[in-house]
Image (cartoon, rainbow, N blue to C red; front, side, top):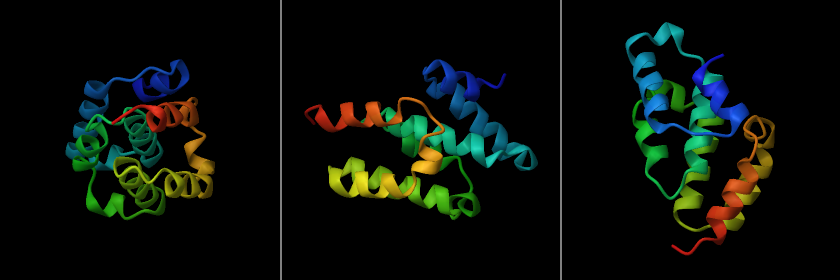
Length: 117
């Protein structure tokens, strides 16, 4: 079982492990699995307000970031960081098909929205 899948199924999170995997993908791009990368970014979104999302995004090639699911995640991150929660939830609803691949996403984001900045 991949570390990323273990994090999803057990609802745990390891930034260090995720950064290591993204670095591996930098050195061996032919091994990159965009579904895995998307789940890593979703988990990083769930860790807001930490800078994890930006740290992970920095290691992802621009060509991958241009794919629709990644563009949507970048927009969601921006809305969350700027406190534009209604726009966040509207955009999240449009992308539910891949956001639901990570259990606990909605609850984690609701917790972020409720916490004082």
